Every structure is written in C-alpha cells, then in structure tokens.
Image (cartoon, rainbow, N blue to C red; front, side, top):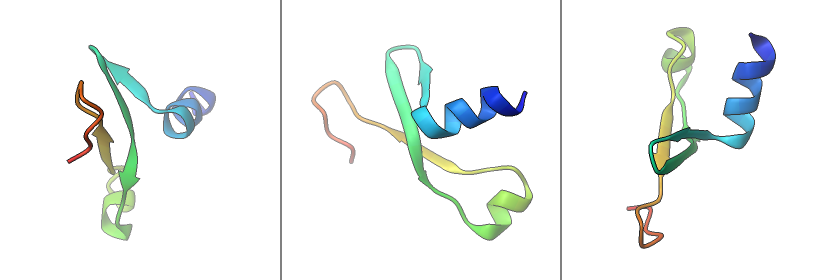
Length: 47
C-alpha cells in the first residue's frame, strides 16, 4: 500500500484523460490525509 501511494504522490495520478500532480497541502489537510492536486487542460494551461 505504501509503495502505491508513494508512486502516486511522486509521479501524479491519471483520471480519465487528465494527469494530476500535487499542488500543495496545509498541515491541517495532512492531518486529515488531504492535499490539492491540479491538471493541465488540453491546451496546456494550468489556470
């Protein structure tokens, strides 16, 4: 389980046609096992 999670955090996560990468996390999110991720749109824009 640890290796699967470590790989997703290090290399990102693919859902559908989007590749999500870690953006940030706060200490309170980490306590609740949460974080923010982002994915580029089809044009390569992140925002």
